Image 1 (tube, rainbow, N blue to C red):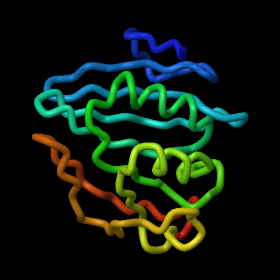
Image 2 (cartoon, rainbow, N blue to C red):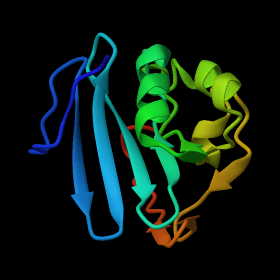
Image 3 (cartoon, rainbow, N blue to C red):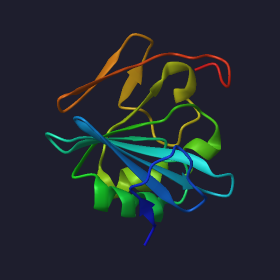
Image 4 (cartoon, rainbow, N blue to C red):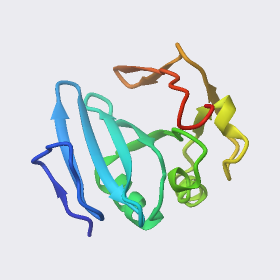
Length: 142
C-alpha cells in the first residue's frame, strides 16, 4: 500500500504521496516512476468528483490511490505529451473508464485519444469546483 501522509509540505518522496485538505477540496500528490513524476488527484469535498492530473507511471499505484481517495474519477488530464507523463494512461483509462483531456498541441502522441481538447481560458467543472485551464507553452508546444 502506498503511504500517503496528511502532513502536506509540497514535497513527496518517490513511491509516496501527501494529502492536503482545503475548504471544498482535497488534493493528493503522488510521486511515481523512475524519474519521480508527480500525479495529482483533486477531489471536490461536496460531491466526491475527482480529477487525475497525469497518469504518469505506475498504473497499479495510481489505481490504488484512485480506489482509496477518488470516490468518482470524472476526468484524467494529461499536462503534456512527454512519455513520462502518460505511461500509465491507457491502463488507468481501461480500469476506470474515465474520460481524458489534453491540449490540442499535445494530443497526437498520447496512447489514448483525448475525449476533450483543452485550450487556454477553458474551465473544468468538478462538482462544486471550477478549475481554470491556463496554457503555458514552453516545455512542449501544448
